[in-house]
Image 1 (cartoon, rainbow, N blue to C red):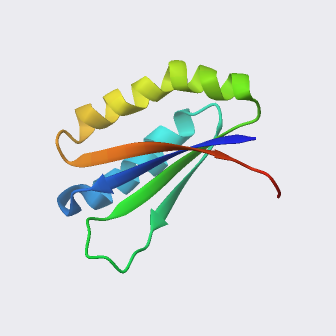
Image 2: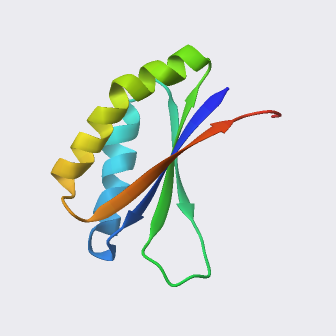
Length: 96
């Protein structure tokens, strides 16, 4: 299984709206299983979240990165302009 983890650092002024949007709008639109996780840290940083999208196969993972991923970023830019930064990490599940 491949998991795309998108780590978002969010401006505190839109944190609640970001969480509400991802939970209520973005996750239900995904055809893959998705989860939103809060990343806790001792560092004094902006609120940080991980959006994890699970793909059963390498092809499904690549297909997701080729099309739906761009629409996620476009929606985030439209909804929260200049209020977040992100980076992607590819994870591979080895054991349950």
